[in-house]
Amino acid sequence: MHFSTVVVTKACPVAKLPGCATLRFSLLTLSDHRSDGGLSKADRLLAMLFLSIALVLRVLLAYHFRIDSDEPEPLHVVWAWTQGLLLYRDIFDNHMPVFQALSAPLFHLLGVRADIVLPMRLAMIPLFVGTIWCVWKISVSIFSPRIALWTALLAAFIPPFFLTSVEYRADDLWTALWLTVLTVLVAGRATVGRAFTAGLLLGLAFTVSMKTSLMALSLGLAWLGTVLALWFAGCRIEARRFILYAVAALLGMITMPGIVVLFFVSHGVGPQMFYCVISHNILSRVADRSWLMKSATRWLALLPIELFGVWLIWRWRETIALRSRFTFIFMAGAFYYSTFLFLWPLREPQTRLPFYPVMAIIVAPCLLWFADPLLKRTRVFSFILPALIVAVEIALIDRAGSPFTNNTTDKIGLIANVLTLTDESDYVMDSKGETIYRRRPIYYMLDRITKRRMHRHLIRDDIPDRLIETRTALIATTPRLPRRDVAFITNNYLPIAFRLRALGKTVRSGDEKWESTRFDVVVPGRYTLVCASGKTAGLLDGTEFDGPRELTAGSHTFRQTAGAGRTVLIWARAIERGYSPFAEIEPDKMTQQD
Image 1 (cartoon, rainbow, N blue to C red):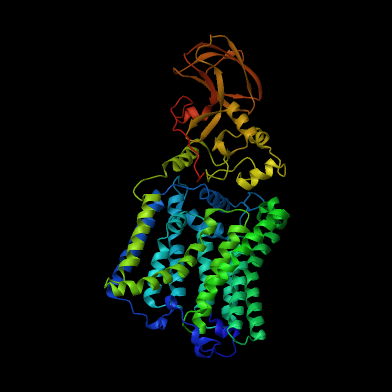
Image 2: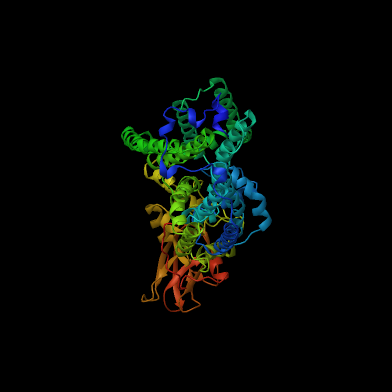
């Protein structure tokens, strides 16, 4: 959207601006952006090469890059959609629902498979392509085609952006929508319809993530800042048109969230949706006055730097339209990052995802501008510097996550084991839905927010009670559980595979004599007895033990008459399906991705 056509009633030529004769700043003084050199054959060939490399890397990393715990989490919600479960009522999720709902058809088409995360990652590639196209489209509306091309290529290979966007997460769609909104706002003539479209896209972003409030605030501040910059440049602002576009954008913004909210309200889960998406995510520190004051002070401390950046842009010898577009993009990115850094309560890496492409639009052209005079003086080909930077980015991507090393086997193996051991009706106690295809015995997922709420007694920790009530036989990812619950699980579940425990306990250690042993069963179920040396024999509750048996909660006795080594009581299905409590299990090391 050309800001000169949005709020300026009369074009303001550079020559007529106050003090225009002195507005020469050598490092930012360029000829018209449309004549800053076309695309050379080398530029085109390198672009094709790097884009091909990007596509190959995306596919390889989709199947080899380590799986973050945030990836199975939304897939568990997608599975719930395919099972006819109603989000927020039947299953907990503290995110907006549209990304998961859009994923449901592909998820259903792929069927039940342990490696479901990997093909679902491939669905993120079009979102990545769309994001990079938006970077190019925004850049070419401000700079030359060559600068726009290399800006898009540099943005595509920013290592944290590239690797995080490989993962299956709602943030990929969220980022693509953010860049699309910016594209609509700067790459076309201003109309009421365009303002409404931008608002509609921003509203769609809200249906993907409530973190869009961070974007909306940044866009509002950037729009206000750009209007003020135009006003200081001597351009008269027509308030009526300004208000008209703002109203159109606002109407567009509330349309999609309104439809989504009405859907859940019509199904009787409006209050549950409000709690899950809003109330649950509000931490006490957000309402803490001292934290707010400190954060606001830090945010304001960055304001002079941001204003200095705007001042530099307006020293650029270009048209008002180009400077206003660049100002808007710069301020949108700057306000997004400063607000995220100092005012956002949860500083998760994926929340930075929308910032990286905007940062590239701001930084890459400046870098290319500064380097061009030097490259021309030394007669070095102008494509060497940006190509070298992209090559370094690719090397950093390879170092952070080699596309040729498979780091997905442990998480996929966990899902495969659960599918082997359980039926559709069984419950599995995981923390964030990492087993994907099975329901948890508790309503909540155990992310950082839920654990903090449990610690502050805002949510009742009834995990042991629910394990007993639902007769849950499998536990996954124990380290994420609260300490009290870990103690209960350690006493009543035995490890049988990577990050997987089954109902059971040690009845007799290897050095104990064959005497009557008393043990307690807390979770009723179908159990069997095994020993380290193989088959065991004896009297279970006074009758001959001849195989798996249903045991009720309470005290039981076992008098062993055959078998050597440690003797354990174990969930019978685990033994029947080839698992053993005596198997050597891969050490579990919790990482940042868990």
